[in-house]
Length: 431
Image (cartoon, rainbow, N blue to C red; front, side):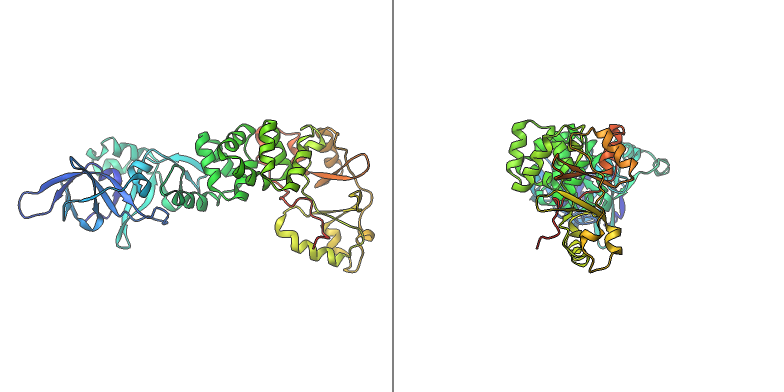
């Protein structure tokens, strides 16, 4: 086979003829290209689809003798195997041309105009997606232009290992493999921006292809309308699994945008403790400390030693990113004091928590307005502020990122880094 590299558009419509010593017999025209393993980094093209009056049949790559200068595709034998159904193979033209993809490195949604292929490793492989004007020109008959003129059109190519298709590839598990492995590499904010540019159906499809934690991170960065649309399409069971992985304050905000009936449907699918926490948070006004707070924090009894506390933190650390403060409470969860991670590390191993904690704690009531909470955090240079009820019971904390949310424009809120990570007010006494 003399074809070594080029674009699929240069082969579409070529006349397929049978090799022989006499007059060459026309058997059809090239209409598509079949890939059996689309999850490979650079997928191998296994066969060409030849369309004729008999229907569509496959010409295996091994049966191709030559791509002649006059445009003919010369075959060793008449294609006899019928093209497989759409759900059993990936058709590069039908399934990918003009479809949306994610440029993982460029962090944007683009559209495939053509596909570059090259002969490497003994096989003809997909190597890049052409998203530029050149691909359109070739497909509109640009093949009639001279190679010199075509080469002057700037190429906009994305290497195939940076492409994540967003349509229904078949079989289903192949689509999920491609989307998950590549989209999951993106920062949640970038992924959310991409999802926000998609149709409602495609957005739900992308989120559904991700693991629960990655999906939760992305969902936290989306606006309320997009969140609602995705939740509607995901179904209650999967949506609940993802919401459980969200920071509790973000999860409560999302639930607050839904009808009471839908809220309860989702909460019934969750762990009982998580569901109870979220029910309490949803009840607070959004513009108050209660509406801003998260129940994700670490607390400890005052009689523990520093050494025992550090050992427990090491055990729990993989579950959380926010362990700058430890809150000291009694058995009724009344706040007694607080200590920073720095204070803990600088204390002697045998010191008792009660002796090293700071009992002069700045706190707010859940009814305090969000702007006042932000001012309190700024005034005392805090990373988080505890929220206490009338009896001094610890209800949650407002982190600095959520406090900033209350005083900056909506368009910037979801771009801020998140501090808390889903550990449901861990008690360090737990075994």
